[in-house]
Amino acid sequence: MREVQDIMRDDVVTVAPDTPVHEVAGRMAEHRVHRVVVLENDRVRGMITSLDLLAHYPAPAARP
Image 1: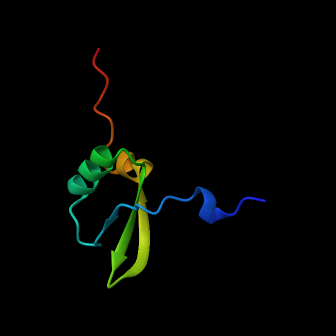
Image 2: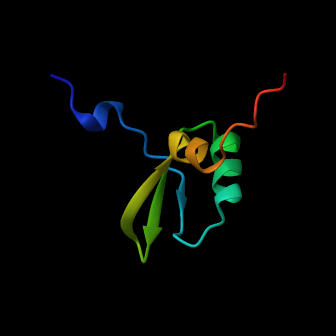
Image 3: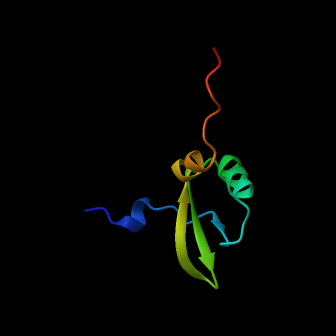
């Protein structure tokens, strides 16, 4: 039976809680990931996802 360690990534992209949102979006694009772990003092504080960013940057209004 496979274990999590067999399929997990260990090159996790991390940011601090005070990182500007546009910088997080840039790192996601640069590293081609959809999730970034938020660390503070080497403790996981949370995670931000590409869906979180979409909610922060709503789509522009449709053109007629």
